[in-house]
Structure formats: C-alpha cells, structure tokens
Image (tube, rainbow, N blue to C red; front, side, top):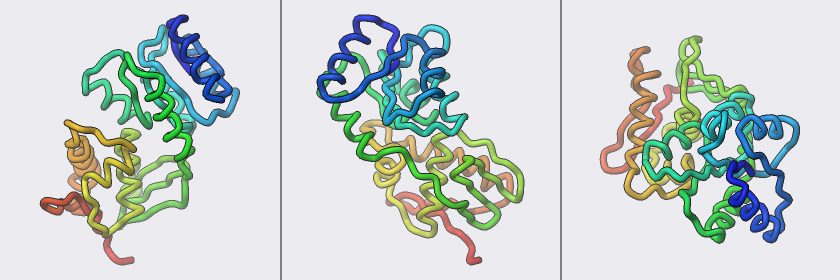
Amino acid sequence: MVEDEPKMRDLLTEALSEAGYTVETAADGAAAVSIARAHSFDAIVLDVMLPGLDGFEVLELLRRRNDWTPVLMLTARDAVADRVTGLDGGADDYLVKPFAFSELLSRLRALLRRGTPVRGDVLQCGPVSLDPGTRAVTCEGRLIDLSAREFDLLHFLLRNANQVLARVVIIERVWNHNYDGFSNIVDVNVRNLREKIDRPHGLDLIRTVRGVGYQLVCPPT
C-alpha cells in the first residue's frame, strides 16, 4: 500500500490489517518500485500524489517490467482525465478521495477475485500479431506502440475475434468497472487502434456495429 500521508497510511494499514490482509507499506514512489521488485503481492493500493515518482510513473514502471499485479489507484483529483490516465496506464480500478473504507475493501476483494491476468499464446489476425507474454503488437512485422489500455482492448478483441461485442461488455471486461458518464472511453480507444493499426496499413479489421458495439473481423487462415 503506497501512501505518502502518514495519518492516512496508518489508517489504511489498520483497516486492511483488521480485514485480514498482510500489508507492506511505502511512503513514496521510489520505495514502492523497489519493494514491488523485491516481493510478490496479490494487489497494490497506489496513491497518485506521491513525492518523487507519482503514482502514474510507478504504474508505468511496474507494467513496463511485466508486473501485472492488480492495482487500485487512489486519487484526490476527480477529473476524468486523471482517471483515464491511470486506467490507460494499466490500473485495474480507482477510488477518489475521500472514500469509505468499506468501499475500498469491496473494490480490493473484487480485484483479488480476478487475480493477476494470465498471459496466453500469441494471437493472430491477418497481419496483426499480439504476444500477451511480452505485450508486443506487430503489424506486417513492424512493432506498434500501444498504451496499456489499448493493448488490453486489442487483446480482448482478438480473443473474441469475429464476435460482435457490445460496448458495455467491453467496458466490463477490459476496464472492469461500470464507468457512468464517460462510456465513450471505448470509442476513443477503438479510434486510437484504428489510427495505429488499420489506417497506416490499409486494413479494415475493427468494424463498428451500429447500435451495438464493435467487431474485430479476421480473414480466414
């Protein structure tokens, strides 16, 4: 659990300990990265506003080294842009301060039930290849630079290739939450995938199904 405010850190540690969790704490971003590299955890509760490395930077460093421990981010900033930044960076969920400890525990239990994502075999759709283990995406042999959330979205589309997927299903399975008020986050990330994969390579893999959602259409092998 990463929190720089001593009083909040003590309160959270006490609440989590009383709920039966063994808690390791860090007061800044550098310490969080060091501890995460040295130990294995079931979940990480990560504050955004930290001295030195902030929560977004800590998350980026963890994901870059293929550490996919579920991360629940805490933020005092209620701006949609900050939430999207965390989620696109690979966070699994977020809580806006102030929050009830009961909600924190509920969100944490949900993350633990899902566990760390299992990375499977390389997935292929026409010239597009996705390796879950290395999180590398290529098209016609060229590496495609995707954000963590763009990768997760493409991974989900590939695992359900040729199926019509409703937006609400995509949100639940990729973002793992019901984001009332800005569900166009799916449309934004689909547009980004098209700009990076379809259009530069003259492809039409990601199709819009009007009134429903999206479909990744793969040519027969």
